[in-house]
Structure formats: C-alpha cells, structure tokens
Amino acid sequence: MNVRLPRPAAALVTAVLAAAVAVPASSPALAVPDAAPAAATPTAPMATQAAATGWTPRPEQYAKTVTTRDLAIRMDDGVILRGDLTRPATADGKPVAARLPVIVTITAYNKTLLSAGGGAVLSGADPAYLVKRGYAQLTVDARGTGSSQGQWAAFSAREGKDAGAIVEWAATRSWSNGKVGMTGASYMGISQLFAAARQPRGLKAIFPQVPAADVYRDVVASGGQIDVGFIPLWLGLVTATGVFPPAYGLQEPEAGFKMATDHLMGGLGFTLPLAVQALLGGDPAYDGPFYRERSPISVIDKVKVPTFLVGGEHDLFQRGTPLDFERLQRNGVPVKLILGPWDHLQGSSGAEVPKAGYGTLAELQLRWFDHYIKGRDGQLDKIAPLTYYEQGSGRWVKRDRWIASDLSARQYKLSGTSSVGGTSGRLATGTPAAGTSIVPPVPVTGLCTRSANQWTAGVPSLLLKDFPCFTNNRFNDLGGLTFDTAPVSTPVRFQGPINARLYVSTPTGDGMLSVAVEDVAPDGSVSRITGGWQVVSHRTLDTTRSRYLDGKLIQPWHPFTKATQKNLASGQVAPVDVEVFPTGAVVQPGHRLRVAVQAFDVPHLLSPLTSLLGQLVPLTVHTGPSYPSSVTLPVRP
Image 1 (cartoon, rainbow, N blue to C red):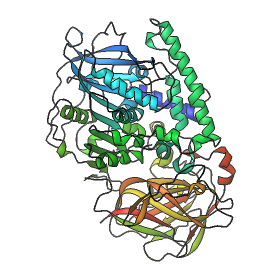
Image 2: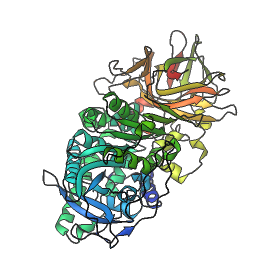
Image 3: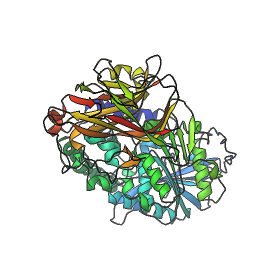
Image 4: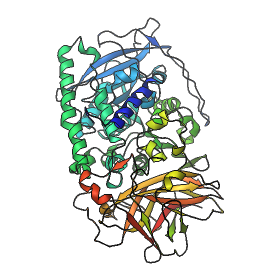
C-alpha cells in the first residue's frame, strides 16, 4: 500500500528490490542530462548461445555504449516524462552519428533504481546486447513514477495515450531512423500492448514478457476474492520506488519538487483509496469499467504489429498471456509464444528462455527486431507459433495453436466421499458414486504450496530456495478434500484451460472453492499442476463468453459484478463452475490425476471484509448421478 504496508508485504517489497540489486545490471547505465552525454561505459560480454534452428546471432558492431539521462518528453497535457537514452559509442566515448532504430521500454519501477542496482529480475535481457548491434535504447518512467511528473493511475487510458506518444516521440528524434520496437516484462510488457493499440507511427514490432489480458480475472480478484498476496506488494513497490528524488533535482529543483508532489498525490488519490475500497467491498472489488480500461484484452484487437510473447505456467498472468496470444493469432498478427515453467520473476528475467531451444532472450529479441525492423531474415518460420513446457515430462512441446485441433474434452467425475486428513474419493470416467464431503474453512491452506510462491510473484522462492512446500502439495492437501483416479495406464496429456464443476451447498449460501489439479506420484508426492478459485455467490455463468470444447465447458466466464452476485438459498445445492487456469501437462503411467478442493488459498486471496463472515464457512461438495461434480480437461490422444 502507500505508506503503511502490512509487514509481510513490506518485507516482500524489500525482497524484490534486494533481488534486483543482487543480479547483473540489465537496464542501461544512466548518466547526465540531455545536453551532456555520460562517459562511455563498456559492458561485459554476454554469453551467446546459437539457436538450434540454423539461425546464428550476428556479432557486435560497437564495443561501447553511452547513456544520456532524464531526457524531457512532454505530453500533450504539459506533463513531462523522463527517459534515459543509451546509444552505441565511438572509441572516444561519444554517441555514434548514425540514426538508429529505437527500442522503447516504459517502466513504473524507476529506471534509475533498476539501472543503478541491477534489475535483471524485473527487466529481462540486457539492453546493451541490442545497442551494441546497432539499436538505441530509450527507457522511460511512466507518468507519476520514477523521475516523471504526473500522478500514477496504473494502465489508465491516459497512460496508454502516453505510451503511444512516447513511441512517436522516439521515432522523430534526430538520433532515430524512425523505426521503433518495444521490450520489457510485466508492467513493461503490458505497456507495450497499450502502446501498440494506439498504432503510433514508427512502431514495427514488440516483445512483451509476462503481460496480462484481463487484469481483474488474471490477478486482481481470482474467482471473486481479492489478491492480497501480490497487489499490496505491487502497489507498494511502485509507490516505494517513486519517492526517491530524481537525479535532475539539483539542476531543476522546481521540476523535482513538482515530481515529488505529484507522486505523493498519486499515492493518496489512487493507490491507497483503491486498496481500501477493494478490501471494504466497494466498487474496486467488482469487475467493471475501471478494470476494462486497464485490461489489454479490451484494446488488443487494435494491435497490428508483430508480437513475441513470453509467459509462465506459474506466473501471475498464467491465464492472460495465452489469451493475448490467441486473440492476436486470430486477428492475423504475426505472433509467437514461449510458455515456460516459470513464476513471475523467472518469466520477467527470461534467464531460462534458452531451454525452449531457440537461444537466449537477448538473441530472440535480436532475431525478432532484425527481421521486422532491419529487414534481415530471422528464419522465424523455424520458431513454432507456440512452444510450451509440458509439466510431468519436462519436454518442450511445439504447436500451432493453444486450443489445438487434436484436443478433445475428457470429463472425470468426482465419485464417493472424501474427508480431511487424507481420505480420498475417486475420479472416474464412468458412473460416479453418490457422496457428500465437507470442506472445512482452514485459514492456512494454500500456505504450503506452490500457489503461495506464484501469487507473491516468485519472491518467496528467492528467499527459500528448494523449500519443499513449493514442490510437494502432499501436506497442504490434508486440509481439504482430494479425489484421485486409479494409477493411469497410458499418459493423460492435456493442454489449455480446465473447468471444475462442483455441486455445493453452504450454511450461508456463500464460500470460496480453491481447486488444484495435481499429479500424485507412486511414492505419494504431490505435484501441483495448476489451480483455480471461485466464490459461490459469484457463480453466475455467462455462456456467451465461456469456452467449450466438444460441447463441454472448459473455460467458464463469470461477470463478477455486484448485480450478478447472489447467495444460494439455505440448503440449496447448485453447480459452481471453477475456472482452473490453463497449462500444459502429462500424468505419466503409474501416476494418479488428483483434484484437491479447499476453502482458502493463503496468502493469495482474502474475501472483502463485508463478505468475510459469510465466506468463512464449511462447504459441502455433492457427488453422484444426481450431482455430477466433475473436472473437464482438453486432452490429447
């Protein structure tokens, strides 16, 4: 939050910043004002891995780079944003005279801090890799963050307009050849989609890592409860990095004072009220115009430039990045997606991208931009449209589409009774046995699971490397219900979104279902594959926006509005469709497929305080022919 972060969130903010400092610099080194370029700073050579597709990265053209800091970029309303420009340098440390294509990155995490203290965890590939091969890098603080004036209002229409204007500004400078690309992860990836939707002159290609699609459903309120694991961390990170005085403050004290005042007002007028209203059950707790304005999927049909996406199967935007890919592909935009077994920080750094088989992140960016900006043949047809890591086998799968034509819907029905402590029901493809099973409201479930790491952006795994809870769900599953198949005799391979339809009743007519799809090994260890969440009172299903395969629901869409929220009647049993986030996985022979059901996911989710008592109740899951609770997977033969 703004000035009074809860202790756990504050600790996580500190950890993120510490992690950024602990790695080699990946943002351009920053120097002095516009009129006086900094001394040239040689950068360490980056290890080059030749791609396995016959394409080889070209060598450096320049040995040094030089950076000019805090260039003033005036928006049409008079607000001045600040950007740092890194260019190739001559032997005497001066910028090369040639006009160059420009790579733009827009950040909310303070370009100066990212550069001065490292930042590869947040920023991705080292921009010097492209700069030394004939590009210029412009890194800009978003409005109301870092060194820029204005008040921050994350991903507002105004910020999207700024993003388009920054691109056009970069395309028209004396040091630019008029061609622009964009890079960056998370906030920086989302900014690319909003910029591209503005269709600014000069923009030729973008490379977003771990971007969102629908911010409400992706991250703000999974299933209708508030994400208290990541959102306070994120708001606190932006706020904390925005209070550092700008480097230009001594030279331009009036501008520096205005920046500080703007940032303070932004915190008081946007960050703090947003968080408080959401927790108190106000408008920010529900979907609506506020989130639609801030969701890239609302404007993605206007994105026309080639787009290379990197996503994570354990990322905050596990749900959203594939949706971006599908929409762009449907619209005929040249698009690629690499989806790895990564949390948010891992996906942002891109350090493990080489495992997909196409080279390093920096090499892929060079290949992409050289092809679409410099006209060099990148042999992009040798990169599959979709490349994803298959959990359970460790192999990388190449496909043309996310919901591929060889997938079919397979339904497993929950059968019989399960109870807390390890007594499992069955998952069956035949006729299920009737039963009733009670899910107790155990307010620590979720804590010992990979979900706890995922929904705090991967920070805990930096602090607790090899922590067994992140790889084995066995202990956590004891706090809820489990339903298992028999050991499978042939591989069960699935790809895409999953639906869990549970017939439930509750004493208050409300409650929260936390559903995990898991792999149980012969030794009893439990690997969490993916998960989903759903508040019972938000069960209203919009069939026109839901997704079906072979006539079976695989991705439900709930409105999550105040108007559609409705408790069950006392004693009423009703189906609740839980959107289980998409993935790619295989359950190997001898392993069992498991569906685990709990009533909490800590520290990820918390009910708005106005609904807390009504959701702090046991839920009863009903199974059998009359109540066909089930999970539906898109399965590959």
